[in-house]
Image (cartoon, rainbow, N blue to C red):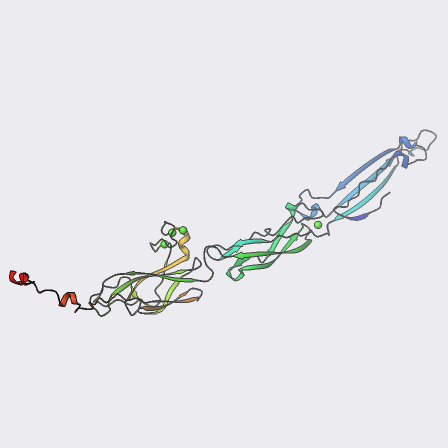
Length: 331
Ligand SMILES: [Ca+2]
Ligand SMILES: [Ca+2]
Ligand SMILES: [Ca+2]
Ligand SMILES: [Ca+2]
């Protein structure tokens, strides 16, 4: 009869089949011996818990004879022979981890977190079904600091805590927001010069395209004036240091030129509407809440109109304005 054993969860042997050919008794014919078999398991029915894999099976074989007829002594019948086998079932085998490579695109704010099983590519276990395995990925959150390929480790664990790992490559690409801030300006003529002294103004929209959820301010500037500055000859008003740029969702400008103004995806733009004076120009240093900085500058002049060649022949030699018919007749 089989003895006690310890086996892996995927290697539980079938029960030994005890037949009447295997047994004999002092007074009952083998074919009349009653053989019973029972199996009791402590296995938890829930495949998500370890007790579904680590458990004990108790197998009991019982052979009972008949009550022997006279002249056998009283009480010599109904004897039982019992054999018990304890099978200790366990899962000590880790899953087989299989990884895949993926590409992810950062969101507007420049981050992306992948689900813990994203790299899984059909990992399996000796006993636990796939849905009972758990996954953890490190790292699982990516930012602008991770642009390009990243080696990532996936750990696959079965319900009994056995685990194994594999590595995959997560390639990180920028989304609609640039990881490195981009600076640009758009200039419009205001045509408001009053003299030839270069006091005309230009309207300037300074734009930073960057990650969403940032704040951008003017750190310092020279020659940059508020959009509300009066027209010349009144003096314009300097933009104060610390002035905040307006988020693209609230600047009234179609920043991305798609025909819609201030829609949600314009939160990656930051603008400042301002003025500068012709032939002086401006210089402004901008910074964000991460202390990233950028300098923008611009200059422009209105043309100064002049007359040239005032003494061209067509003027100097043109006949004087006729004051009498006689002059015309002489010609
Ligand atoms: Ca296992
Ligand atoms: Ca738009
Ligand atoms: Ca806008
Ligand atoms: Ca848009």
